[in-house]
Length: 204
Image (cartoon, rainbow, N blue to C red; front, side):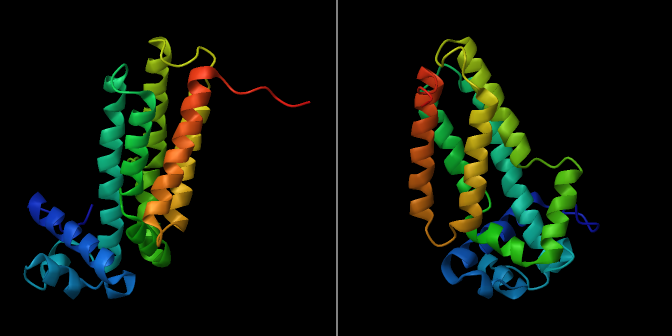
């Protein structure tokens, strides 16, 4: 998406992985172009040769990680009937939690230019949470046809609950990654029970 292009895909990933390590180790305040290139052990100007500054770099990192998880979610339907529904849902939930890393997602929110770039890309069709939600719904529909979840299961609502909760955890769980994973697991357990047995009785 950079007007200068990215001619060497492994360089792009090398910079992205380096940025994630800097954020994990030193926090958002330490993320600079120089810190990224030093961590990647490459020339200082390499980041600016491929991106129009740090804001675009951060935005492209988030979008790249969302696209990666969207590809994983797209493979869910092929897993219908394999492992358990809970295991498959938890796998995609955890992938989403680490998709851009809570620190990266939080950093993007603090940089208006990066946030704007992400919004524009998503509006233009780049894969994001909606793509993942649709893929989860398709997967659950396949499991319903296969008889592993109840006929009356609201698959779209379950997918929305999972993706919406993970989105919330990404935005608020920056400093408690293990806690976010545990809460995602608790939600998956609740969804799995409802999908397999139907919702509980409604109190009068």
